[in-house]
Amino acid sequence: MPVTPESQDLLQVRDLSCRRDGRRLFAGLSFALGAGAALQIEGANGAGKTTLLRTLIGSAGDFDGRILWGGSPFPQSLPQLRESLLFIGHRAGVRAGLTPLENLVWYGAGRDDALRALEQVDLFGFEDTLCQELSAGQSRRVALARLYLPQAPRLWILDEPLAALDVAGVSSLQGQMAVHLSRSGSILFTSHQPVALAGLQRIDLAEYAVDEFADEVGGAYAFG
Ligand SMILES: Nc1ncnc2c1ncn2[C@@H]1O[C@H](COP(=O)(O)OP(=O)(O)OP(=O)(O)O)[C@@H](O)[C@H]1O
Image (cartoon, rainbow, N blue to C red; front, side, top):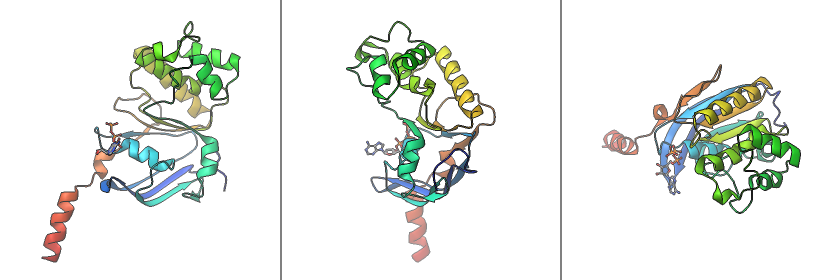
């Protein structure tokens, strides 16, 4: 079944448990994401937010539970998912040796669309500057400019999109997220900051944290 924004639940996660280097980070996580919906993943540093996003897009494989994209089981759904997906991770995928304009064109944008997007993220005048000469916030804006392109995919998965942005940048991004939702797009993102979006769902990974030591002690008592 193709991954389409018309799917009732674009993503369904059931009883998910993720590990990193063999250590369980969280367990028992279930949620759904539909078209026109946004979900914020919260949690302390190291809680497993990035691991969760990477697991959902098939970049991390140490998990138990069910992941269904557009109703199709994982990992068969991944090729279709990737056609619908715009993932912006911590490193943001900005090529330092290219200009902001060249970065967007590299991602397939036309020159005029790219210039308009750069203007919307307030990088007018910096389009031909090498990204290695930009500030952290400006570099983040280059990555986020992809969200302002007319051909932006329906599903956005964003790891800390607000990091390094100033107040105006946060406000602009929240506005663009709202526009995306109004067009039946879907957004799954992590953030330590509150985000103002109508109908936003939130999940705190702390509620699903696993205390491996407690499990071991419990096991020892159970079998002792
Ligand atoms: N590169 C790495 N190599 C090995 N283990 C890692 C690595 N990065 C993270 N981990 C482990 O995986 C756990 C989860 O990390 P993850 O990056 O998913 O957390 P996070 O919730 O996104 O944190 P943050 O808020 O700091 O970005 C961490 O507690 C850490 O022990």
